[in-house]
Image 1 (cartoon, one colour):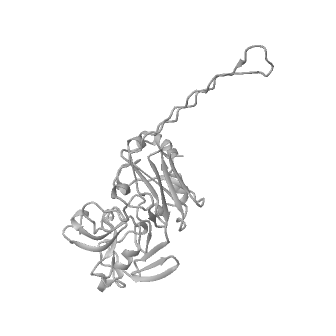
Image 2 (cartoon, rainbow, N blue to C red):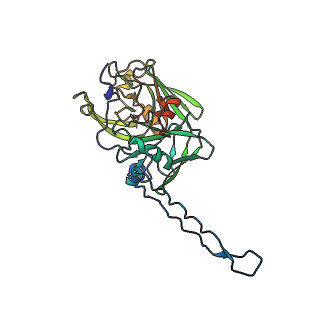
Image 3 (cartoon, one colour):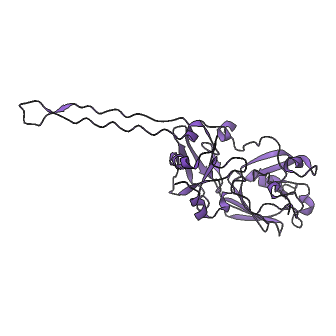
Length: 323
């Protein structure tokens, strides 16, 4: 098999635009989390009467000082990036993901987790887990997800200190399952189902197997094989590009799909859709957090290669928490 690190290799060059912005800086900009330690004052030690008269009132014991709130851990004081913005609508697979400016030592991770709060309006619970991001050091990323996909309509609130307080809503469910052996994608959206012919990674350049989550999308993106180790195999613009992994896996329009979709896998790892409106339709209906599952391929995408969190069994996911 080819270099698995390059799988899905029609890599976009330059910064990926965050889709669904209400200000790009709010989506991926560094969010400085200020400390919120507030000292508690002492209570008054005024006199009280015993109700019997004759003599001074007995002095009440002085109230103990309220404990000073613990300062935020250094990782939160120095800054963090959160993958969600207030008011956003996300798909059922979107995790809450927080990354830090520096690696958080193992001894400090429990304190960080205690300051990161996720609540929902319907009682859905989940767990944090430290994830090794493909482009970051160990201890620089932590994600939160429930055991199974979020329910449509769930409101998720994320808080960390006083600087982060945002609520997002889970939209309709969309789960697309790509069968690379059958060269088809089955899209289940809000209870309706349709089948779409696709072409996936050719032998040796296989598309990642497993569950991926849409992180963003671009109307047009430049893909250059030299950025992912495939020499001069290709360089050009591709339309209707849905971003799936950090390593460069996209689901996008590909003219080769006009001939090969539904019968042969010919790409360098991405999932190709025809130019007859098929790619445009899918592009227009997906949102960040929608789920793309690939079956029948070889190696499973890592948790930190994009949002591969759902490939980790639940017990193992919970064990990744420092608490």
